[in-house]
Image (cartoon, rainbow, N blue to C red):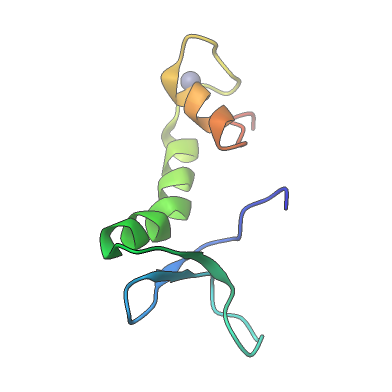
Length: 81
Ligand SMILES: [Zn+2]
């Protein structure tokens, strides 16, 4: 898989499974299953966090000394628009 599951993601009722967006498939995609609810909440927020960083980051191309650019590269994202 080269792209992450599109958001929004949500935490299931039991608090340990993160699901992808609602779709017309019979069951939603499972993004992650974790032991701790706090981790599930953090994972579920990832698409929004990622979008916010991309939208608010000032660099239009990768700057080697920038920690945010390095973070975007780490998750396979790009800030080139
Ligand atoms: Zn940067």
